[in-house]
Image (cartoon, rainbow, N blue to C red; front, side):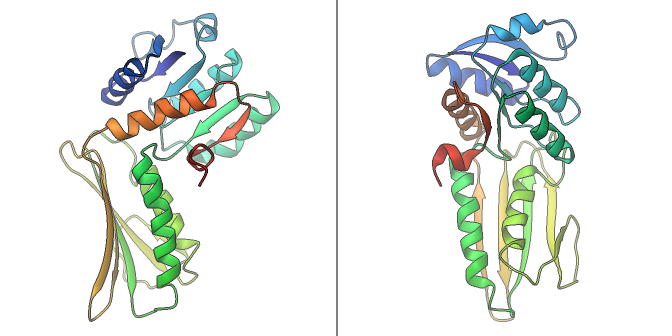
Length: 238
């Protein structure tokens, strides 16, 4: 299949390599050099688009894919305040959107593990849950979409926690989610339940961007020919 790439940084280049290794073709690359000069007709020649740009440009890129009738896989985070609007336009125009806060297969399994552990811990009030995420210094949003997804997984299974906060807190109703940006770390997420006598901890540590890139390409292959709004749970049938 022929894929359009929105964003050609480190992640975009990794996606390109994975796509080519799976016998796909990169039909169009959109970055800062041609964001205002490429045509919708060029985009229409592609079977799907993968969007990994910036929070400021993601929504515009999504709409361009809708206009071209091209299914779009979106991995950019930090734009979800506009989610309702984008979802409405997608449905009204009968287009196709696949969004995930993280495309790694391992991370999506970790999402399920996180929710299951939260349900197990919910009756045990002697434990307090905290979270930490570490990403590379180039990541523009904090907390990350992955961090927010993990936090929301805890909140919906622990009624005592009312909201997450991106800072240190001693308030029992707040879930502490600390974001760190260090060197070139691809992504580390840790959830810890601490009591006076012990702690329980689960973590996901990414070794490289390859897992994220592979998931995005698999999503682009899977979404071809479909209409509607999808996510990793749909593709992985979880």
